[in-house]
Image 1 (spheres, rainbow, N blue to C red):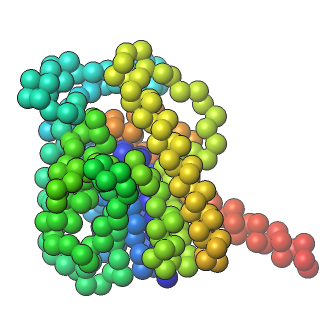
Image 2: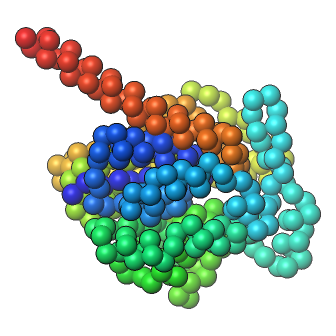
Length: 307
């Protein structure tokens, strides 16, 4: 079985969409399993039913209001870099209401149901081997994987939303007596889970550059510093996931193809900029095309050397 795995990465999901478009429409790759974390969980339901144009439209028209019902950020620019500072008014409202997070992402929940319809859910459930989203069970300190075949439309949409809730900046969710958050806290790249579910070839799109060669600018206030810190911690989780995924694939003789971003796209993936995300989608498509063209050139060169 062939699997498509898409990591977490917030707004960088637009890049993953471009890579997936090339793989599915140009290379004509057919996938049996679709697994995602966070932004990957938003992409895979649409990709599983080949609604690439629809998900492209979603990812290239998103903004902060699409995600946040209460936005904890104020976005500022310095040169070619964007950074965040705290929205004191919104954060104060959260404290007054005795909330445990700086912001709320209820708009995202509404938009998931708006964009992934019940009819599309039923079609995917009937025709796709599996669509799996990753969530973190904070109450039990474990990672859980939620299959489209195990839930109703309403529940599965909620699991997609929960997979994206990057606390403490977004909502914390309560479900079935437990508290949940972004799946990336446990498995930002669920390659090993794809292997466990029987995948023999995996295309994994990882929304981070393979070799970080740019110094990050640390926040100048406690709030933006916290954003940087969480980014660092998730980078460590990602590296562990990829290493574990490679070992799992090797042990099961599964083919693993990795697609990284060629550069660091953004220092804050919770900033949703329509112009940048449109560019990133095209960059993802071009990156995948160039990767396959280079592979073909290497194959021709190897044949010439053998001849």
